[in-house]
Image 1 (tube, rainbow, N blue to C red):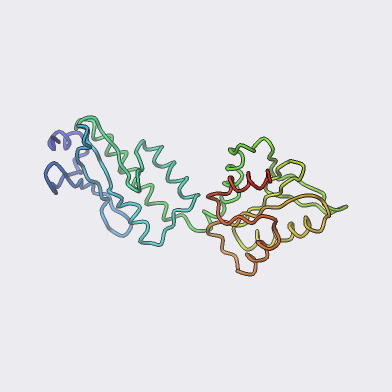
Image 2: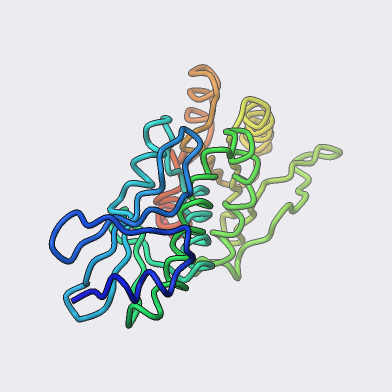
Length: 248
C-alpha cells in the first residue's frame, strides 16, 4: 500500500499527487513538454512491494507525434540518457523503482530528468544525427569480432598516383573496403571510389552501407547498389552481413 503522505514529504513541494485509481496516482511535477503537455508520470506499486514510477510509454509516444524516428543513433543517445539517470526503458516505457516512499523523491527526480532529456531529442536536427553516422559505423566495426582485421581511413593506391580511402579496410586474401553513405556528397564520393576499385584490376571487394535515413536520390542509390559488390541497406544487420561476406 502506497503511503501518499510519505511520498509527498520525500519530494519537492511543487509536486503533487492525483489519485486516479486505488493505490495509483498521477504525479503532477509542474514540468511540461514544449507543446504544453505536462510530463506524464504515474505512481503505483510494482507487485513486489516497491514503488514504481512510470511514464506508461507517453514520452516516446509524444516524440512520435512529431514524426520522430528512433534511428540507431537516436536509440544510442536514448540508451545513454536511461543509463545516466539510472532509470529503465522497457517496451517503450521509462520506469524507475524505489524501495519505499521516503526514497521516492530521488527516484522521481531521476525520472523527470530522463523524460526531459528524452524529449529534448526532438531538437536533434536530421543533419546532426546524420553527421555522426560514419563515426557510429566505425564504432560498430571496432566492437565486432572482426575488429582485429579492420583499419580506418587507410589510404590505398589503386593505380599509380590514384589513391582511395575507404571508411573501413578489412584485411584478408581478398580485402574488403567499406564505405558509409548518409548524404548526397558521400554518395558521390563513395561512387567514385567504387569505380576506382572496380577498374583497378586488384582483388578488393567492396561494401557500401546506406544509412537508414540517407537523403540521396534514387539515381545515386541505384548507382551505389549496382557498383558495390555488397550493398547494405541500414545498419541494423550491418556487422552480421559483413562477417558473412568477408568469409565467403
